[in-house]
Image (cartoon, rainbow over all chains, first blue to last red; front, side, top):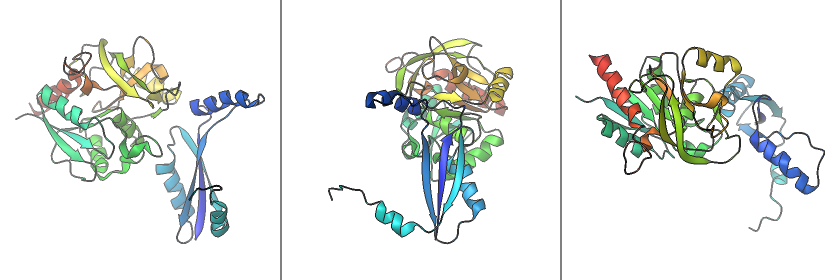
Length: 95
Length: 227
C-alpha cells in the first residue's frame, strides 16, 4: 500500500482572501509579527498497491488542483498508515 | 417546431426549475437533462443552471465537470452546440476548460445577493444577440465565489476580441478582474455568466424582464441556424 500526499496552493499571484482574513485576526491573539498567511489544501491518497507517479500527477492536475489558479506538489509517504491512524484518533472525542 | 433547450440537473442544482421556466417563457421547449445520463436527447442548446453542484466540494464545479452528461456537453460545445452556464454553470464551464479563467472566492469573503446592473458588451454570441450593444440590464446576482480571475494575457485577449460578454456596472460586487460578469469562447457558442438572467423574466418575481433576452437570443440564434 502506498500513501501519497498532494498539497494544493493558490498561485502566488492569486488573491487569497481567506488567508488575509486569518492574518487580520492574528493581532487579536496578540501576534503582530506575521506578514502573510496563505491557505491551501492537503489531500492524502492511499493506493491499494504501489503508487504510479504518472497517475498521481494526472489525478492532481485534472481534479485535485485547477492549474489556472493553483499549484500542487506531490509527496509519497512511506508506509505510515497504522501509526498515523493511531495518532489521528481525536483527543476528547465524546463518543 | 420550437427549439429544444436542455437544462441539466446536477445533485445540488438550485435554479434548474427557473432556467427551464425561462426557456418556456421565451417560447422554447425546455428538456430536463440528468447529470448521470450522457445522452443529450437531441437538444439544440444546453443551460447549466446555478446552484451548488456536489456541494461545491473541492472547488466549485470541479466534480460536476466529470459528470457523464458533461462529457457529451464538452464534445458538443467543441462542435458548436450553444451552452450557457449561469453562476455554478459558469464555474463548471471554466473547470471543463470550455471557458478560460476561473471563479474564486469573493474578495471581501461575503456572499453577495442583490440586483446587479450589467453592461452587455458582446452581442454577437448565441446567447446575447437580442441585446443592443452596451445595453445596461438589471439582473439578480447571488454568489460567494463569483470573482473572475485569469492571467493578464488571457484578460487582454478576451478584451481585444470582444469576448467579455458582460461587465458589472455601478460597483464591482466581488472583486472580479476588469469587472467581468461573463465571458464567451472564441466561437461565441459557449457563454458563462455569474448573475442569474432566469430570475429576471417576469415582473412578479424579478427586478426587470432583462434576463429574458438571453433566452430569446438562443431561440433567435437557433431559428437563424435552421433557416
